[in-house]
Image (cartoon, rainbow, N blue to C red; front, side):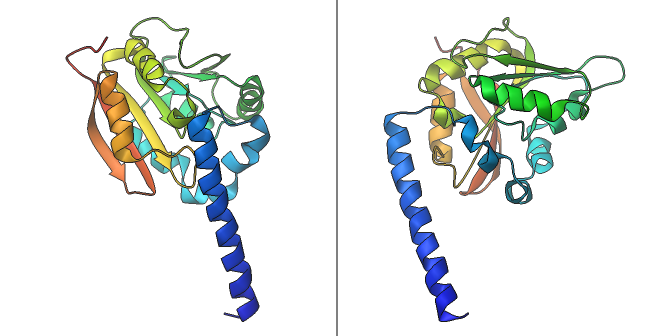
Length: 219
């Protein structure tokens, strides 16, 4: 490789490393949802190649006829694929999307228009106080969302409440997300809320963990 290119890539790598370190420190102190202005970084061809929605959803076990909650859909990176998977010709199967950012929900609405079955319900809301009845969902999932929630225990307890007793919670994380938690950290958070892992996929850089409700409810 040409020496000039080596210098350029080294410099870019250093800036990326510094950005990741600083952003992690800031967001550890003050966890907040990603702004809609950064949606381009969440939904782009590079991310689709590295973190394919189809492959991630395969690991979650989403199937036709399910009632599924997508908490924190962002710009809808997974939404269209999820909606198509839960759709069934019998009219059952629905995807519910809830995000605290109204601008993100607006983006999802534009994204799914004329692209997926009419089985998606969008709502602006807070993951720490879910506007759904007990036992509403067969499956709920979050992708690079949990680290953005200030009260993670409260949010996971709310998910415990709205997931059916035999339902599934799926949590996915990957680098270089600045809110990325280690696998053991995610499992510890979920266990405090009453979940136990039963399936794990991926590696240090990207993982999917599926949980079931524990027999012992944590209050």
